[in-house]
Image 1 (cartoon, rainbow over the protein chains, first blue to last red):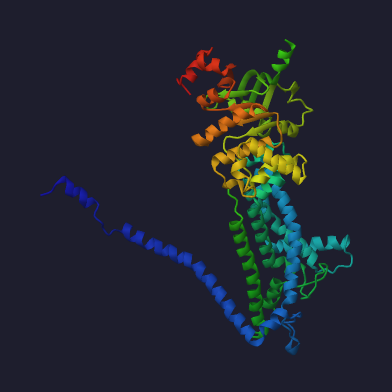
Image 2: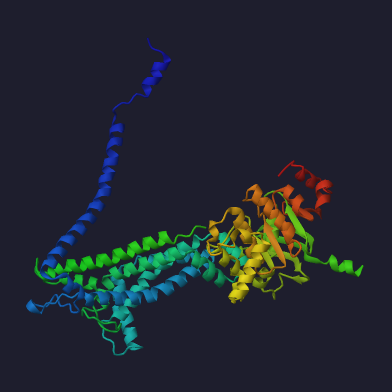
Length: 311
Length: 258
């Protein structure tokens, strides 16, 4: 005997249909997709560690980290594996880039967030972000064929065709959009009420920007600096094209130098034999670079958490 | 007779004020005088223009693009929309307290010292004095004197609002504008702020926007009723609430709309 109630209950009974089967498979498929990138990352780190360990079987760690000569691509017993020249090259370019990008990026962010009319901002910000999408090889040739000749024709007539200075300037220009855009985001998220309070006490726009908005957004602004610097450390094409291939422990920006990244490009595109010490040195340098950028990224995260403002 | 004329000389005189947001007119031909050392309440339903009107008095509306103003607003006899007005100095004389407490994410001390600092005071001793005096005036000193270096955002809502009052007083304004200063506060904090308004009126001229008609009745000497951008009625608070001259005012204060 059928009652209306039992018919109703039947409708809710679980049935195996293509819909429920599919619904069961979907999350597993999605998980696999997510795992691909995680596993790739782990794979890369694993390879890096293994090859780096092999490198250190041949070259003592202390010699690598304190040596002041890097001649890895020389033949036979002229090879020296002291990473300091590559680190100094990287730091030189990074410091120069930061010197260019931090003031200009912050100034652009202040203009966009505090001065620009809505219409101007709506045009400028996307343009700035497009700048961030230009391939770095284009920046590299810009440095080599425009900035270097310009510098040699004006302030530094004695400078060589490859130099850290023009690479630093152009790496700086490359990271301006990133710093400007992230800092602007941080500054625009400062509540309007706080600005109004400052204006209502007779602040000028500049006072509101520098004494109220920038301090209130400081965690985001500093995080944008650190991320920008981290990009500069890892930047490859510009320095490979414009900064030269002469590993040198120097802090003179008009010198030709070599960065860690540029060495890796040079070594990997040269004719070193697979399994040689020079080959393994690519991984050791890569590991050093990875440690640098990872520290910067962790620092950025720490700063934005630790100094987060609550409004 | 002469003495009385001096006494009644208004701190603020508004004449035939029209205000437009782009094409849309928000205030229609508003005229009113505000006496020195008095509390004037602006009441009316949401969107009636009372906050807009308040913000014309320290030219905060300048910050909104597309605002246009016609008519006159005189402070102590000087038209504040004249070309030769220094807006920053005007805002120093006309302080403002906002609807929601908006302390800077700085220390309690730095919040109060912000105004004096931007107006050129650098002496630590002088700043200490101003901070203490302002916090005392805002009835907050005893609660925070041992933790002036603590962050202002850690205070309770009511304390934050009194801090904002102290911050506004620290630049020694003549006039203090308050835009629904208690709407975000609990009843106890609200009554503290109301007591404060009564004390402050001895030194300052206060104009306060409020949604709360009991509050207007409790704190103000005169009350202005706004509706749809027009000043409907402006009179002594007692008169306006007990014997309103206009039918619309009566409807509003008896709760028939709004």
